[in-house]
Length: 500
Image (cartoon, rainbow, N blue to C red; front, side, top):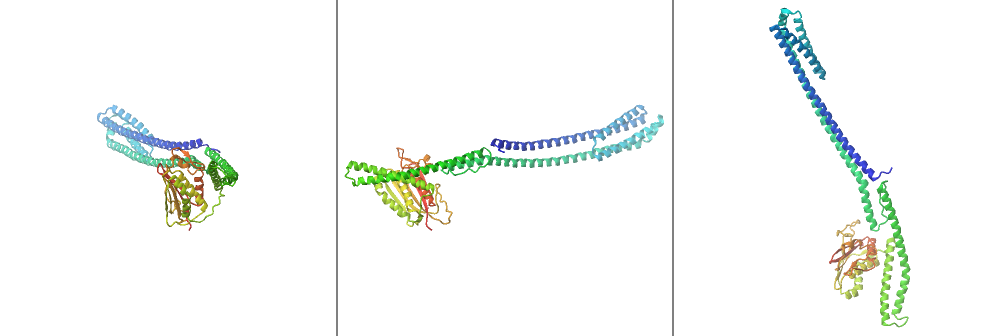
């Protein structure tokens, strides 16, 4: 079943809200129950205490009525005794219904028995009436006083035991509250853990695909059209990834078609251009007849343009072969110093013409590298030509060669080789031109990109030299990069692995 991103977020949010509600409901419910039980215990304890005190007051009132009846012989006190006895009985019954503890109930029953005995003795003493009843009541007064004291003591005992039981119950409630608090903490902890898991799940579901798509976009922008986005989910990101992968495959097909077309056109152009070069050469050498100075001048211009076109076609062919992995590279021991000196000899006339100074710093003990001499010469020629091209008249270029422990990189750090103690020869070609603009730096090694230089801002070259140089250097296991600052010139560096 396909679960969309909004549904995943809704489910995740619902689960988090549900866990928060569980914790809240449990906490509120527990607190409510504990408060209700606690209030019930306190209310019942207060009621039992008030009823117990009332029993004691009633029995003392009965004792006082009894004494006044003996002393004053007034039947009105008999009635007061009877009324107090009835109220005592009702209060005792109410107390029995309130008490739930067996030990307190047992004491209450004992109190009721003592009260029954006291009431029986009183009624039996005054049953016959007259003065004789008063005398008999007077004779049992000590016994009745003892019963009253025992009733009061029994009520005190019941209240004391009930108080202890209430405290024990409250202590149990406190323990239950602490347990409930621990449970709430555990549930809260689980809620947090579940919330974090939901967050990571949503993060993996949403953030990770975005990161993968962003990374894939970067790869495709660098020309790696076969880079796939590894997302196989059934949501919107999965659909987007599949569309992205299809787009990459289509772009790769188009790029291959373009490369094939360029290769085909380049092959088709080489023959007529070669014929044109030979024809111009024959005309300039006057093999086909005498020519005038004006004609020789135009033939010179034509020869330069033909050579430029042949160079451009050769670069196109090299690029298409490099991209297809078909450019032959024969790695043999090579002295980089000889390649540099050869190029210096080749560019001397141009340096004199533009009044450009060349500073050369070659390490005296440069090791041999394993490389294709023709291709290394091609890279060095490209870099030196660019340096001269972007250096103003009266300026300066430099060529430096030394030994490096790593392949090098744009951040200036020497990335160590994965092959243990592998050394590299590092070649630097620099100029003191205007430098490369920040907004152009990312495109310098792109195919057909032409950097603009000078106040005119005109592009120079075919835009293939640096792209070809990069692929040649990387095919040798080296690296190529540059550093550039406005008005301070540009430094191009490349490394080649040495022969062990």
